[in-house]
Length: 127
Image (cartoon, rainbow, N blue to C red; front, top):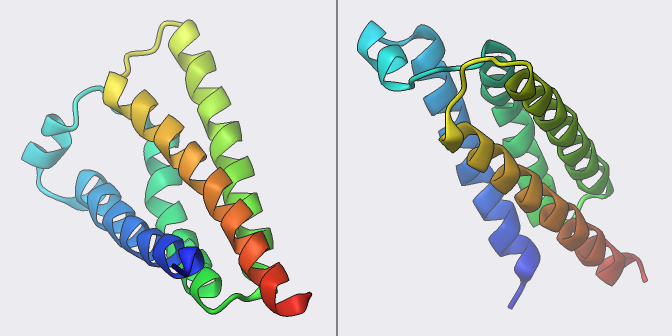
C-alpha cells in the first residue's frame, strides 16, 4: 500500500473539514457558535486558518514533493506551539472544552505521522 496516498488524502479531507468547521464557528449562525461551547479564540483562529496548509501539504504528500515534508513539519510544530499556549490558558483558568484539547492532540499526532510518511515517501524516489 502506498501510505503517502492514504495520509495525503486524509490530510486533504482533514484540511477541508477544518476550514468548514472553523469557518462555521467564526462566521456561521449564532447557534453554531453557541454549540461550540467555550471556545478559545486563538486556537479557533489558528485551526480555521491552518486548514489550507493541511490541504496543500496533503497534495504535496500525495505527489511526493520535497516541500510537503517541510510543510508537514512546520504544521506539526505550529500545532505543538498552539497546544502549549492552549494548556497555559487552561492552567490560567480560561474556560475551555475537553474536545478542543483532544482535537489538538489528535492533530499533533496526525501531523507528526504525516511528516514522517512524507519524508519516507520522498526518500523512496530520491534514494
